[in-house]
Image (cartoon, rainbow, N blue to C red; front, side, top):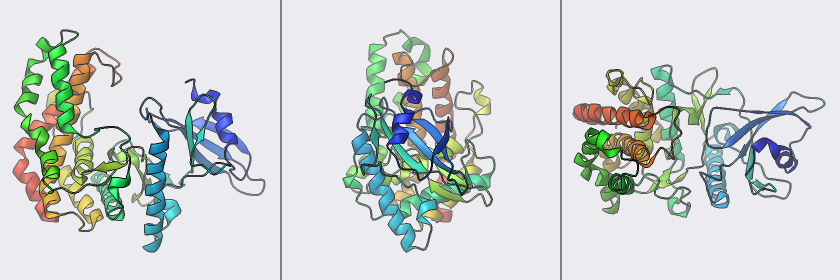
Length: 369
């Protein structure tokens, strides 16, 4: 599949945007899909913007299933938001139909394109500059859970198979360790031992799900700060975006992935581990916002397992980095030797910090439950 720019005119022609297109530029900092901001100019009005995306064929092999998930969830959200007196056009994505009535367009090379109106007067932040912004993102993701509490999760397709199956991530790690194709295992004995000592932990959430303790819900599965649009004036979390990984899953994982990403102040590949620290204060800030957004929908078991969500998502991510390092750095892009190993070590440092703060994490959940 060629450069997205070679097909953008074909994709734009598939949509009726209400005015002539006067420009399109690459947009955002995402690394998966090809994203463009499209400008149109009505003859008697202000410029109107749209987001046009080519869905990554490498990451998502079945765009039909992916878009059925996205359309199903966004159409449902619009109804619930309207019923609650909100603004559906601002508080969730609107998937435009093509001229032929489909929810995405397939170009001559097989690339899948979708288009949404740009949600104006919002910002997309790459890092939580203040605790208040972290809280706002937490409230938005919690609200996402609440709004979708009655959506039948089992009707959604699994767009990435076994994405947050920590047991499967552990199995893949063991295979990579046994194969040791590049002879790297001898240099990572401490990291290997770290994982093996926690192998039983990898089953905690899944065993609770299988036992009926943790319900299957509609989950986002990529709950980073930059997947919430913030109101540019108030800082409020307005709209959850990037719905490609919306699938059946566990609410504790959505909570936990945000903690992994946001409750520390270091780069993901920081070499100086003394700079990598789990921030209990930010954990409490996020917990407060998330539970307020959830509005009481989580079960007692889900509340109890929220700290496990934080630990397991961080451990799982570290295992994935270590597995990729053992296999030759094929999945996660690297820009220097040992970068995936450094990424792994930061995650394991955060896991160790969480273990030391475990009782305090549980207390923070109880405080706001």
